[in-house]
Length: 236
Image (cartoon, rainbow, N blue to C red; front, side, top):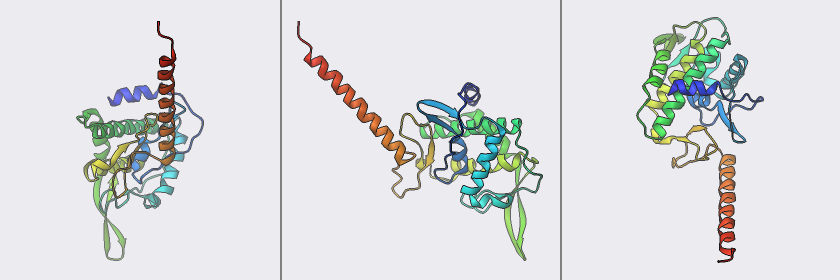
């Protein structure tokens, strides 16, 4: 299933630069939502390694806990952070393809959860391969204080891939599964984690809700018009 999604990505139409979407503070879902539908067409916002680099810079803005190469918020994995002490990230085509592979795996597993399907084993294997590159360790915070961290065995790529995989690990094992939703708009493919008290949110945004309801209203009017035109036709 993941392989099919990756194959379909290569057929998707390239798009002008669009804003990245950050909906509910979950890095794994932020990655999934780099695929969007605009005017009925599906677009991949990651066309080049530079696109991923720009997205990652925005991740650091929306998730301040990831600054300073300490990546992975407390909310994602209890007290663990990812500490990376390696050269600057090289935004390359191989890294782009690996990130797309992880994205496809997370999207597949999110779909499995939302639609109550059996979990896709290939998607799990993809995520587990990234998780296997990390290991827990202790680090000195200040003075006599130590903090738990995750370290990555992959110089360069692990600094991006491991935080994403750890975020997915938390989402699938520690978060409340009934709060994970796909937007109710049939023309939207975004996922979000519902943080409302009632956990009844159905749309990724108010704009998406309004567009969906406008479309539903339009279809209802057209259906009524078609029905009325049939009634007005002369009987033979």
